[in-house]
Amino acid sequence: MEGLIQHYGLFVVMLMILAGALPSGFSQTTRRFQFNVEWKNVTRLCSTKPLLTVNGEYPGPTIAVHEGDHVEIKVTNHIADNTTIHWHGIRQLRTGWADGPAYITQCPIRGGKSYTYKFTVQYQRGTLWWHAHYAWQRASVYGAFLIHPRMPFPFSAPIQDEFPIIFGEWWNGDVDEVENEMVKYGGGPNISDAYTINGLPGPFYPCSNNDTFIKTVEHGKTYLLRIINAALNDELFFAVANHTLTVVEIDAVYTKPFTATAIMVAPGQTTNVLLTANQVPDSSGTFLMAAWPYLTSVFPFDNSTTAGFLRYKNIVTENIKHPQKMPSTFEPNKYNLPKMEDTKFVTKFSDNLRSLASPQYPCTVPKTIDKRVVAVVSLNLQDCPANRTCKGYEDNRFFASMNNQSFVRPSLSILESHYNKLRNNEYSTDFPEKPLKPFDYTGVDPVSENMNTQFGTKILEVPYGTNLEIVLQGTSFLNVENHPIHVHGHNFFIVGRGFGNFNVAKDPAKYNLIDPPERNTVAVPTGGWAAIRFKADNPGVWFIHCHLEEHTSWGLASGLIVQNGPRASQCVLPPPKDLPSC
Image (cartoon, rainbow, N blue to C red):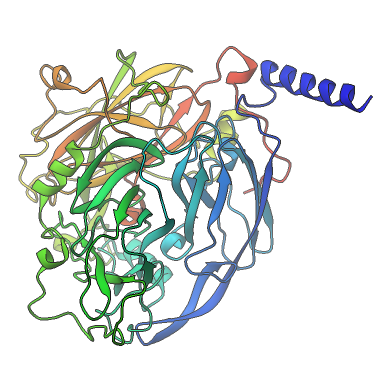
């Protein structure tokens, strides 16, 4: 009888999968987590302040699951302000209610309230991350999201150990005040006081010798480094002195392995590398690992370096002596770091990123498209309103836009309005699919043109299954800059990149449609463009935005509605009963 019941249960599960009531990656394992959003006093750089955390941890707790697992994360908000959490890179197949961006897929979790994010990790494995998606809370509310694969890694190197390296930024002051000041006066934000590795600034900052990340390794062993850029506003180079890194994964997608002396990781991106401890250290027994910014902007930036150490085990050493401050003759090449302005290095590194494209891990890039959207990503300068104080360039206000549309969040989540077919003025689906007035995007004078933008909540809507191409075109307004654009709900393939203006008559012929890199966040080249392709096969509403937080605050964002498909398995699931209300 027990055997019959078990077989019947499996039969019912299979019927539910076929009917679309359960995802095809269904697993009987449910992993549950509790997140408490709360304040905790934290000391860095000789300064103690209340820091917003999850469970009192900075960075927050690591979520580790297996491919195919159900995940339930109950988030309880113990602060007075609203909050939400985004599971960055998780596709959320049909479960957009769990995606997290405030006013896009949910209303925020109010103080004293809870919301349980429920989703299944399907067809994904590798390193992703999670972070707050309300205001600038992700300055300290973030952590790793690790998905262990069902199959062995597609590379042969035996791994001794693995560990996350999460880059962040630290402000001595109140981050809320930094954001509020920027929004109120339209100027650029105050820069951070330090970069961090796993929440620790390292020895090049004041009072930070003991706040330094140190990882012990054994000579001859190979380690998997899971690298995450959780910094708010900076692309970062990373390197380990005297060591070579082998890139094997980006944004939780395997790549063709290649070696590099350093990597560049944009905010929102992840990169897995292999490191073999095959060097001979000096008497300290250590090698420096360090990160510093990739500079593409004329705006003020945090010109500093975060560092940690690889400590070789079983080496007779003296006490490790950390440098007390950044040496005046600091030479980045000594630590394998490129120069801050080294766009040539970034271009070559990006060119080396290729999908594995193997029989087991095929590259499913659309060879043909149903729709091409050209979106100009730009900084803007808005005229200062009468009787207002503005602190942007020439006493005006900074904004940002896509196709001259500066995004404004609605008062009700767009997914709720879409799902319930509410006909209101909260949003419209008339996002311009190409620039209304084409111009020399990357050759225009940075400051002499009219850079005023329009404001609204215009998004794109496509039928289920659309093969979509989006060309992200940078401009030279105010300055040329690298923009990390993140697409929620879908992975995409970067089929082309270039400098200058996209040429629709010539550039598509040079696309890589064989093994382009697959990501969820693309670094649009400074003064250039990037073309991405994907099949819009995840019904719901999905945020598209720059992952430089200051640019998102200025409006460099839009959204994508993917309509339900004809089958039940191609439709958004009903909203959970505990979905927060606005």
